[in-house]
Image (cartoon, rainbow, N blue to C red; front, side):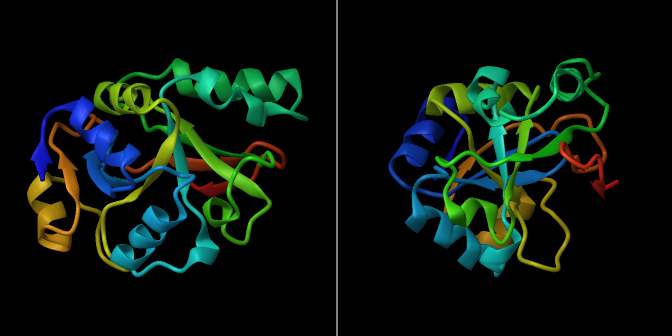
Length: 189
């Protein structure tokens, strides 16, 4: 199913379906992060090991602020600034945050932290809001292949195996950088 309706896409996620959708730089695959069966389908489609973990994408700070527990005020401010004060063509930032007990183990993989990004991409913001919370966001490509950069690329990889929310990519040329909020380590530059 290909749609331009955010409401239809959110219903697909709520029904346990996998959705391909445009993000800031590449197309992503998403699902309800609390639906293990949907998440397993993403891993099957991507041929990705569960140990790697995935990113959670949120529409606003309120959807993820419970994950700030234990972080200094300075670190929280740095994270929020990276999510809210960037231009549309600037690279997005994903942060590794302490995982709360409500984050499923399959989302974290073999990691004690969870990767989180608050997006400014209008379609992704609308999707997370319509869904009612954060969603899984992992690049739309089988392991080892280039991430999809269009609806056509996504369909070429996955055919009719999933739902598609058609729209425009953001203006960023690269997938998000990944930083560890606790150690300051750069995971993906």
